[in-house]
Length: 101
Image (spheres, rainbow, N blue to C red):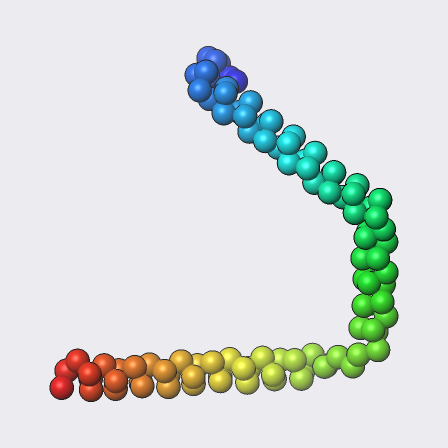
């Protein structure tokens, strides 16, 4: 490996790069072997069928409008802030009762 000055890297750096390359190749082979096994047993076809059926079911759903989505998001954000404030108040109150008194 060449450094910025054009000199060769240390043997330790070259060894790390070699080991890293071997690791990538090993995991690529493992993933391809698992995929091949699943393909052979028809699992990939079943998964593709599952995705197709899921798309069909999602087409039947009624989705909220953009205005409804924004309104719901604002409502959830307000609820989160209120719950956080409530938790903080109760925490300070209990801290006062158990550690200050």
